[in-house]
Length: 414
Image (cartoon, rainbow, N blue to C red; front, top):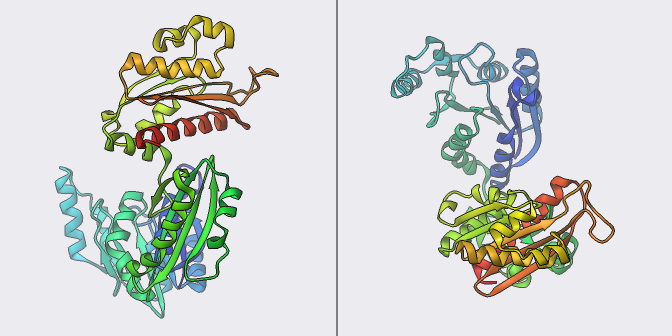
């Protein structure tokens, strides 16, 4: 089956919001073995909306629209689909009562223009909205499937997962299961060489490498009669690859989402460990990324931005003599920052960053991109030297990523 995702909304074209719906739906459709050939975005213009949906119906088996289900006059996605499928519109009393009840629970009066949200193409399967007012619907006619979902991401995802995914799975005759192996510390070419026997194999299980900032991942995929049957083919390959790559694998996940900061935060909280940070060139980025993990309050002991030498001395106990002899950007300073902060804060793990993020400030001996990252725990202090390139933002993010990986490894006992 071939699918097309049509995102409706002028605000998308104007760049006011990002179309995360299409990304989410593509991942979910992939797991069903449904190929997504096109992503299309169209504004709230009746003629352009009609033309876009008509084109999608002409070249795809499944057309999923997001947005355009609201109460205003420019919310016309249901009307356009019904017109193109030559279906009359019908008012659904149950949907209207659900909308009224939603407003009542919110302590608000339901404006009468919301009745528009309770009108659907005749014969459509109505998809109640568990998170908002606009119901969706699913229409099947002449070998085509049209699924119409609300635009807000949390409403769209809840509706698709709860009410659409299972219905589509019944029509595909099988499922695809994937696992994503997240790798840090090995380059893409090195990973590809080490895992060539799986990447180059022409069998039931496919392995594909992907690269992102500072890390790479392998997607391991197989098809089966059910998701569980497909997963039974995938897992032995995943286990073999992770055994080969060892500690460089920081996560194996069911989707392509996930991050080092989540894994580091999870490792800290699961092990009941605390962490403290002292950051110079990263300017609090390590701590900020850790804070993205829900529940990190149980682990993040304290965080300092120690740009000035005085701050390194005050909060980390760095010796003045060390700074005078080796400079702020040095292995010795990074070591004393991490060790001193751990001793003063009482945290189980302390990390430090010091470097030159640029674009100016570099010298021949200490060029832009030189960064030292330190990590102190009960087993001692380790400092890693990084020679990075690129923009200031890139250097700071790569340095923060290394610090997070050092936290992860310390928490896991690597």
